[in-house]
Amino acid sequence: MTDTTETLVYSSDRPKHAPASLPVRVGAEFAGSFFVIFITLIVTGLLGPANNQIPGLMAIVAALTLAAAYGIAAIVFGKVSGGQINPAVTFAAALTARISWLDALLYIIAQLLGGAAAAAIAVFMAPTPITNTGFPSVGFIAHMANLYDQGTQQFLSLPTVYSNLTTFDMRWTIVLEVIAVLAIVATYLATSNHNGLATRKYGMAMAMAYGLGALVTYPFDHAGLNPARSTGIAIFAQIKGLTDPSPLKQLWVFWVTALLASAVAALVVIIHDSVHANDDAIYREIQFEEQNAPASETDKSSDNTAEQDSSDSTGGTTIIVEQADTGDSSENGNTDDAADGDAEGKPDSES
Image 1 (cartoon, rainbow, N blue to C red):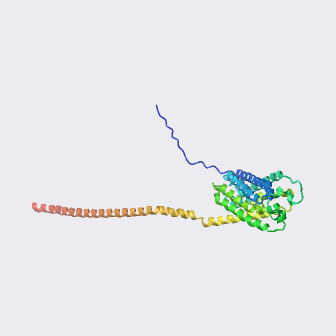
Image 2 (image 1 turned 90 degrees about the vertical axis):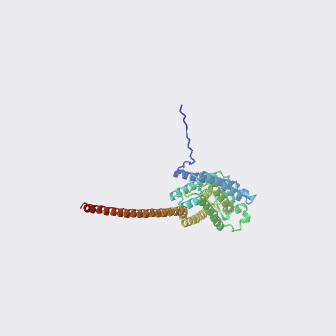
Image 3 (image 1 turned 180 degrees about the horizontal axis):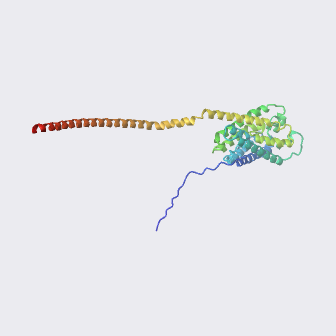
């Protein structure tokens, strides 16, 4: 009876998944943008009027909402398309060569379409005001849109107090949006790999970046931070009659600030990478030399010893050979002389 034994071989190497195809990645950007922007619009639209009773509440609610929505999208779609969900982030990814320009163009189109679809559904679901007497009557949609000046959260909450103030104008929006988007894009560049895909820290880092950005910018312009989010709601708010102020006329500010911040962050990364481009190669070369320096010295010393030994042995052999040759020649000479003498002596004796 023969015993059969089975040998099981376990490997810790997991098979690497092939990168997602371009249509799948574009679809992920559309789905992620729709999810994030729809949640943001619904929460800010429905809870915006609550700020009349509890000042400052919406800044906290918007921060938590954006943090949760963007964090979830980054985790779900981060390994597929990078979970960029923002034209500013995609623009920076293209500038730093993490994705191709074709991918970037298709990503941005998908993000805009996702934002438009989310805005259309959110505006359709928004409650209709009973009265229609000017700008404050649009209520929910006004809280959804990205606006500054009279469209800010302060004016919508307390219009009689802020009606004569010009403090929260476009300058505040430009400065705060640039700072917030700069932090968001920098977070993406710091927590994504060279293929534009997410690392383990990406989801939590992006959630924190969007949350802090919303906390700072929401009271002044309803937290733009994302041109796709600003564009969709601006179009459908204009269709619904929100024209004073018009979110569509103010839309250019949210695009310019986002792209400017994205370009600045990308430029810093490009300069850093160019300065430290050869750091890895230099480090590996130094490490290689340090590891191999003792071995080379040992090899050199052993080679020198071997050469000395071989030269000594060769010299000794030569001397011995020379002595042997000398001895042999003298002995042979004496023998020859003796032989000659014998040869010469024999005739003498015979004679």
